[in-house]
Amino acid sequence: MKTLYILRHAKSSWKDFSLDDIDRPLNKRGKRDAPRMGAWLRDWGLQLDVVLSSPAKRARKTAEKVCLELGDYTVSKEQRLYFENAGGMDGVIHDLPNSVNSALLVGHNPECTETANLLTGSNIYNIPTCGIVGIKFVLSIWQEVGPGSGELILFEYPKKITSL
Image 1 (cartoon, rainbow, N blue to C red):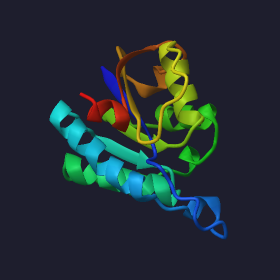
Image 2 (image 1 turned 90 degrees about the vertical axis):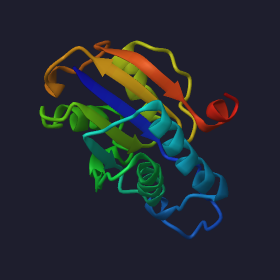
Image 3 (image 1 turned 90 degrees about the horizontal axis):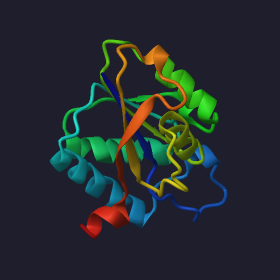
């Protein structure tokens, strides 16, 4: 059994238009939401074998802030999570070592939403910033993950968890 979590980066800042897209930081709301989401996920019982993030500053910082709440996780950069399209995310999933049973990928929209919908057959309109989906696969190897092969087990986002 494999479980994949896809987290869209938290809200980013558009204050400094001179910055390259990859260098955009989190804004005030993003800095607040990421640890909040991490604490919620910790209380939910999330445990991971690996955490991979887009190299974009906003994604890396989201991953770091979430993981700080979850426990002692190393966040590794994965270039294919930076606006590669759903196919790029699929490549990352298929390249996960089979010893990994639970993985978190931190990326961007529309790739996050497209991948979640593709793998589960769901019709999520939009994963909001700092939103996460969890997908369970009754498979033993990541290379078998494909369209419709997963079951959506989690879909949460900051505005939803604050209202619980």
